[in-house]
Length: 330
Image (cartoon, rainbow, N blue to C red; front, top):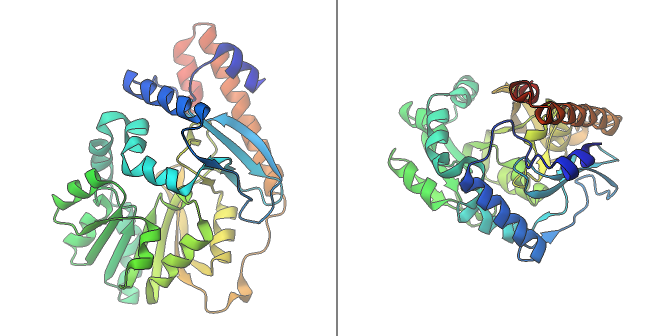
């Protein structure tokens, strides 16, 4: 029924609000490149090394071609096929990502949101004080908005981001931001007391290698802050081509454990997001167990969201526009 609604009634995208003409042109251009082979894609096994998937969606929240599947072994939801690592690098470095998902005002909106919300500082401050930590690296820092409060509080901060525009914006705050990605850390000699990965890991194209690089750059007694969307609070508008991995609390903690990390704090952040503060395990015998029933549990959740979306589209077709928008926002 869900695919029937998409194909016949063609609601265009999975967001309650309309796209701008600028975003529509970007989506059309993206899909054209996906169809004609201009974009390079790859098919990969799940993080659990299995390759038995069930397709959940074929298009992302803006209507961009972005197949979302769920692993029938561990229940991890992921984008597959997905852009290659090199293709994602081009996607982020040209600011196509920011323009596609936020329009031309993306950076200003992000700046306002982060500057007004110091939740990462609040989450980390007491832990850092207790462990006497000072040096901070944020990977994927954007304009460095999360780092501003740390800098004001006397901590030594460094940022890393793909986007030259974001880097220049960060410099207006007097922040030290370098251009690069997690992969760039292989060329960095410094180590840090705290590494922040806020809405970064869900974009990873080489998860275990990325996490290994991160832990290598951590000082003894250091900690890692990782914030990701919580797909347990499933909403179809959370799915889009820039995210390669979609974690529930169970899959998040399971795969962090397999990376040798132990949570010292875990909680929700900004409604549909979650975070964990981790330390490196000294004894890996306490790694997380398997993910029994995670596949069945998440299939049920996604089916419910699909049904809700179909009902919302039918309300729109009947002309009850405001009910349609409210239904999608529930």
